[in-house]
Length: 286
Ligand SMILES: [Fe+2]
Ligand SMILES: [Fe+2]
Image (tube, rainbow, N blue to C red):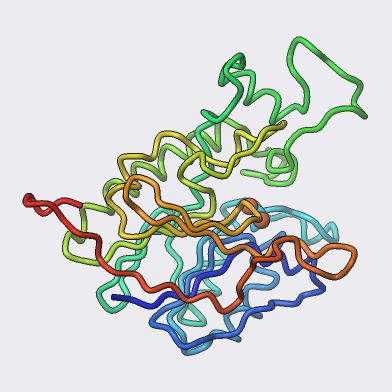
C-alpha cells in the first residue's frame, strides 16, 4: 500500500506565483503537470517547498508554452525537458518523461501522453480534427484570420527554433508514450503500478466543442487495466472514476479567475490517495 499526495494544473503564472500546495503526510507526492507556462520558471519554487519529500514531476502541455520577454522565449520542448531534468536532479525530485521511477517498491510511470484524436465527432476524419486544431478552421470552411481559433498547443510550443509543434508531433508523442507505458508495465511485475499522465487516458471527461478531441484518447484500454491506479491532469475538473477495473483520479487546481477563486472548486491541495495492489487472476494478471 502507498499513500500518494496528488495534485496538478497549478498554473501558478495565472496565480501570481502562488504554488498553493504544501507537503502533507504521505509516502510520495506526484505532480500531474501544468505548473506554468515555461516549467523551469516556477519549478524551483515547487521543489523548494517539497524538499525532503519524494516528489515525481509529470510534464504538462502548458509547461512547454513560450511566453514572456523576448530573451526568454527561445526555449523549445526539448529545452524545457532538459532544464526540468537539471532542476529536478538538483532538488532530488524524480522526473523521467516517457519512463518510470521506483520509490520504495512503488513504480510510478510518467508521460505527458497527449491524445490520439479519436474523441472527435463521427462525421469528422482524424485529418480534419488535426487541421482544425492546428489552423483554427475547417479546411473547407475558411474564415478570416481574426476568426481562427487554433489550439494554443500548436501556437505556443516549439519543437525547434522557428518550428511550432504540430498535431502530427503530438500524435507521434502519444503513440510513443503508449508504447513506453506498455513496456514499463511489464518491467517491474511485482511492484505497485501508479500511472501518472498529464492527459487523461480515456474519453470519460471529454466534452463537446472545438478541440474537445484533445482531452482524452480511446486507445489506452490495454494499459489502463494493468495499472493499480491512474492519476491525470489537464482537464480542470476533479474526478474519481473506475475504468477497466482501474481507479482514475484527477485533482487539478485550474486557472485563478477574476473573483480570485480557482477554476476547480473541488480541488483538494492535500489530497492523499491510498493505493493498494489490484487483485490478480490465477495467471498472476490484473
Ligand atoms: Fe491545465
Ligand atoms: Fe494541460
